[in-house]
Structures are given as C-alpha cells and as structure tokens.
Image 1 (cartoon, rainbow, N blue to C red):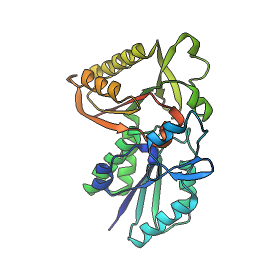
Image 2: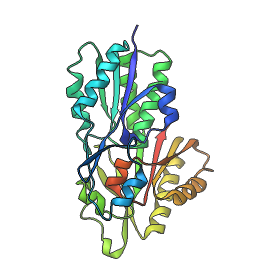
Image 3: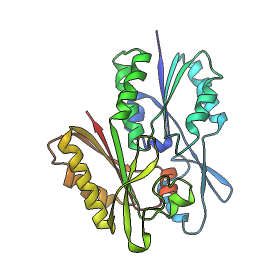
Image 4: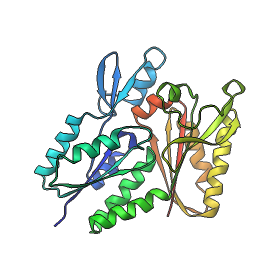
Length: 281
C-alpha cells in the first residue's frame, strides 16, 4: 500500500493547523544576520527581521542539502513510499531544483517535486488539496495530475511598501522599470503563469493601490466562485479591512486570514506587504 508524504518550504506561510491536519514536513529557509544562521520561522520571527532591516543587510539561503537528506532518511524509516513536494516558484528560488537532486538519492521513494510557480498561500492551497486527495485514497499519479490543474486555478497578487527590498534581493522580476517611485506610483504585483513577479496594475499612493486591488479581487469573483486567502507583513489592519470589504461577495466559497507572512518572505518584500490569493473552486 502506498504511503504518501507531503513536503513544502517555509515560504509557503503554512499554518500549524494545516501542518498538523495533513502531517506536512516543512523545510525552513535560512536567514543570515551578522554571519549567524537562523531557521526561517523556527529560530527567528518576522518582527525580528523587520527590526534589523534598517541597520543590517540580512540574506537568505536554501535549506541545506543535509537538512533535505535527513528528512528523506526519516521518511524512509517511517515507511513512506511516495513524496509530493510543493515548493516556492523556481523563478524565485533554487529550492525546487535542489530538492529534485536530493530526491534522486532515494530511489526507494517515488518523489514528485511540484513547482507552485508562486509563493505563500498559493503553495498552501496546493498542499491542502494534496492532503485531501491523499486522505480520500486517490492514487499518487492521479493526485499529481490534479495538482497541476489546481495550480492553474490560483491567482496571487500583492502590494508592498517599497520596491527597495525586492531589488536588493534580486527578486524584482518583471516589475522593474515600470514604476515611478518618485511619483508615489505603487504596483499591484501579480505572480504570473511563469512564477515571476510582474506588474498587473498600478495606482498613485498606498490607499489607492489597496482600493485597486480590492476592485481586481471583486472582478475576479464576479466571474467565478473562489476560496480567498489574505496574508500580510506589517499590514494587519489593512489586511483585516480588505477581508471585511470583500467577504460579503456572493462568489466567495471560503475566506481565510492567513496572518503574517514568513520571515524569509518579509526579508525580501520589506514591511507593508498585503497579499491576496484567489483559488477557483
């Protein structure tokens, strides 16, 4: 009988209740501050990162190959025959490729590493759907096939306080060159089909950018029924207001307040992130 394990990374912002429900194994990214190494979300919090952004230049790195190997060894001992791993977009990190390489050293476990082509709640959505299908007894190959369909039904948007941190981290994607920061023009960023950041729309000032993202969300919901996920990085009040303003739309199937983004996501986005994911159901 197949025994299927679920793996994701800490950039998925996966909540503890989801981890516990589906027995998800989470690989934490590493955050380096003054040559000291911290495990994302384990040894360091989002607020810890924000506190040092003005005075230090923190960097991030992948979970170590050793960590991945330890995890696969553990799964072997626990009798797992299959693994489904859902990772942050391969356009944003090298984790997807690294995990593929490590999995090849464990031929007794059939592993599928799925590129979420996104980040944060979008990864969690795919993991939750995988967990439900595993619990229903669906075959491994069918689950993998259906997860690719799930991925295609997710749209993720966010706004940030400043582009400074995306630029520093080299994760600016297709957003660079289209925004006049001196004119206070704010982008509404879409994680596109390739898993890169691109400008979906723009507005002048923070308030207008939030209103624009609210209009975008309502337009999506006018066309299809969706689960909606809302997360933030030092923008809790704005996130809660967004939730209130969109929650009465008749095409919302479920709405989830995911809370804070991961420390590693906060490192690369800076404070002031408001993120929304729409999953067509």
